[in-house]
Each structure stands twice: as structure tokens, then as C-alpha cells.
Amino acid sequence: MKAKAIKIGWSVLYFVAGMLLLLGMWDMVSKITKGEIPSPLATWDTFKEVMTNPFQNDPDYKGIGTKLISSLARVGIGFGLGSLIAIPLGFVLGSNRIIMNIFNPIVQILRPVSPLAWFPLGLAIFQDSPKASIFMIFICSLWPTLINTSFGVSQIPQDHKNVGKAFGFSLWKYITKIMIPYSLPHIFTGLRLSIGVAWMVIVAGEMLSGGIGLGYFVWEEGFNGGSIGKILVAILIIGTVGLLLDKFFTGLQKRFTYAV
Amino acid sequence: MNSTTKIATQTIVDSILEPVLTPAPAIGINNVTVSFKTPKGTYTAVKEISLTVQKGEIISLIGHSGCGKSTLMGTISGMVKPTTGEVIANGKKVMGPGPDRGIVFQNYSLLPWLTVYRNIYEAVDSALKDLSKSEKRELVERNLKTVHLWDHKDKLPGQLSGGMKQRVAIARAFAINPSILLLDEPFGALDALTKSNMHVELLKLWNLDNREKTIVMVTHDIEEAIFLSDRVVVMNNGPEATIKEIVPVPLERPRNKKEIVHDPVYMSTHDKLLNLLIDKFSIDDIKE
Image (cartoon, rainbow over the protein chains, first blue to last red):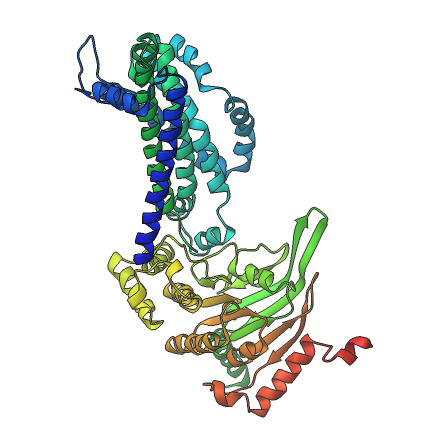
């Protein structure tokens, strides 16, 4: 108990040290550029300004909180749909060598494609930029989850399979009591990588599509509005949210890993 | 009564009595060969093996590593398909694993995400589909209590010691109440003290069941084989392993672990098995 408290104490200390280093470097850059890049303190003022009424949701102006939520919602829908297809497909690919061999080249060709390349295709199909960004997120969420799930399933130890055989597990029992529990940590690794890509891509997508989300905020209010402070605020918010999403899935992954 | 009717009556009596007096064997291995395809060609693990095991008998398969004893056992459990020949278990040809044959695996093979209780329950639930939920629960409880693990029922396998895991595996195999129990080097990973206790536990379970279960065990431990078995099957080294000799163990049951080692029969059996398994006993032997 005490050892754990000390461990947490140290990691907090390291975090604070890292943050101070970042702020120090940031302040230095700000001084060198003579305030062209706003200092941490100036950015804090911008942050407070941005955060006054963050959930404003008027037809002509939306607060940063509203924009963040709309970005998250699009990521959630695209990522959710992608996972809904990638996980079961991963189960099938992982359990069957032949299907795996057929699908593998498809995955290998499509996986390295920049998600942004799918955006115009989505736009052409849906004629609607929010739907096109969801489509883009959907596509890029597929690959890491699909690859990790199928890897997990293909790695199920013979010992576990033998238990199922020896005691006559039904297919359903095999899936729910052996296949899913074994591959769960791999699935969460896939989901974690997927959400990371999705979160990175949504901002870029929204810059392309315009009008919606955090990406639009960076572009329109930050760059076009001539406020580098706002760009920095957005970067910090995007980074923090990304970190939290990652931590969430790392936690799940650890929770469902079992000692033999 | 004339002599013809007498003979006829005798034949009828025999035909009724015969199956009772000489019951069908629990396991019949008939001329079994197992070959595997490898990149280097066909590898024959065991060749033309025949062996009969009576109901209620405990036999050990012993031999050096890689002599095909686990493979031979696999043909009884149904995990391994014979290339030629057949295995009959409880009067039926073995086509695959079945609930009439319980298996205790070499490395316990518990599912690490299920509690001790669930590990046994899921096996019972699958193997004995016709039982009601409460009957299944009752069965799990009774078997966990027999191996003294009821207090640990909510633990995950990762929280147990090797000996406890092995007891869970044994309880799981007994819970489905198979008439044949197959143990694949069940105590190989345990320390000597735990191992000794487990031997006694196993025989206790077998006694509780009126010594009706047929047990086939793979081992490379001579003492273990003698203490537990009625017959020890010594196998030749593979590939193409065959049975070298079947050594009977004519020791009275119940056997006492402490006293048995001083029994002349034990010592001569031990010597015989040692000679069958090892042909070099000193450095001088190796020089020649």
C-alpha cells in the first residue's frame, strides 16, 4: 500500500517536471520570437477567453466545448461502426487460415492509405461533409482493430482449445469462454490504436470539410482569425483528449489481461 | 437329463455368465499406428500398438521423452487420430473426445479468466448437458470440496499454487464423472512433497468411486508409476515406438507410501523398470 503511494507520488512528480520543462521551452520560444508565438501566460488568457461560455450553440457561432463534442461524436460514430465490423471480422480471420490468406492482401493494400484520401470519396458518396468525415473515421478505425483481433484469435494456445475439445464445448461456449476472453487484450490494443488514429484524423478532416468541429476551430478562428493563441489552445485540448482516450483503452487492456 | 441338453444348458449359462465374469475391457487399443506429416517427411510416433485395459484398472505409460506415450494416450482421449488401427473405449470406437473420458492435462490447462468454480462449472455444463442447473452446481461443489478447494472457489487460476491448480484440474476431470480418466504427466511440474500428497489424493478419489474408474496415466517417474498402477507399460524410444514390456505391480491395495518402499516386491519391480528404462548406470558403462 505504502509502496504504491510512493510509486504514484513519483509518477506525479515526473509529470510535473515534464510539464515545467515544456512550459519553460515554450516560454523561451515565445521570447525568441518576441511574442509572435504567445507565451504560456498569454495563452492561458486566450484559454480563459475561449472557455467563457464554451457550450454556446447558436446557429452563427458555436463554443469550443460544443465543437469538441461534435468532433468526439463523429469519432465515436465512425469508430463504433468500424469496430462493430472489425472485431467480428477479426474473429473470423483469426480462426480461419484460408479466409485470412484471402483477406490479408486487401488489408495490406488499404491499410497504408492516408485516411484523408478516403474523405473525397466519402464526400462523393454522401454529398455531406459531416457524413464524409464519419466515413473517413470508419475506414481508418478498421485496420488496427481488425489486425490485432485476428492476431489475438490466431494465437489462442492449443491448451485452451484442448479444454474446449475435451469437455465438448459448444461453438457458442468456445467463442464466449475461450476465444473472446483470450483475445480481449488484443482487441483493446487494436481499439486503442484505432481511436488514436481516428482522433488524429478527425482534426485534419474537419479542416478539409470546414464548418464543424475542433479542426474548423483551429483553421477558422486560429489561422484565419490570426490568433496563434487559439491554435495553441486547440492543440493542448486535442492532445489532452487524445491522452485520455488512450489511457482509457490502456486501462481496459490491463484489466482483461490474465496471469496463467 | 440327457447329455445333449446338459451341454446346451451349459452353453446358455456360459453365454449369460461370460460377459459378467469376463467383462468387456474399458479400453482396447487395436494395432494403432500414428504418423504425422512433417516438412521432413512422415514421422511415425507409435507403431502397431495393441493394449487392453480392464475396467477399474490403473495403468501407467512410461518411457523416455518423445517416446510417443502422450501420443498413444491422445488416441484414447480422441485428441489424436490413429493413422491405422482403432481404439475402443467403453465398447465404442473412439472418434473424438467425449465426456466418458476425462482428461487431466500436463500443464493443468485451466482457463485463466474463469474462477476455480467457473472452470469446473463450464466443463460440467458442457459435458453433462442433461443435468439441471442445481444438479450441476451440486456436482461442482462436491468435487471442489473433495479436493479441499471450496474456500478458494472464487480465485482465478493465476492466484493458485501449482499443486492447487492441479487439484482443480483433477476435480474438473472427476466432476464430469467419466468412466475413464486420462492423466498426461499430471504431477510432472510439482515438487516432491506436493506430488506425494497428490498421489494419495488421487487414490482417495478413485476409492471413493468404488475403484470403478479406469485410469491411464503418462509419466516418466518410476516410483509414481509403481505406487499408483496395477500394470506399468514400458515403451521403447521413438520414432516408431512400440511397447517394450508390460510390468505387473502385484502389490496389495491400499498401499502405504512409507511402507511400500521396503516391500521386496516393490524393490524388484523398481529394479526391473529401471533396467528396462536405463541401460547405463555409471560412467564406466558409458566408456564401453
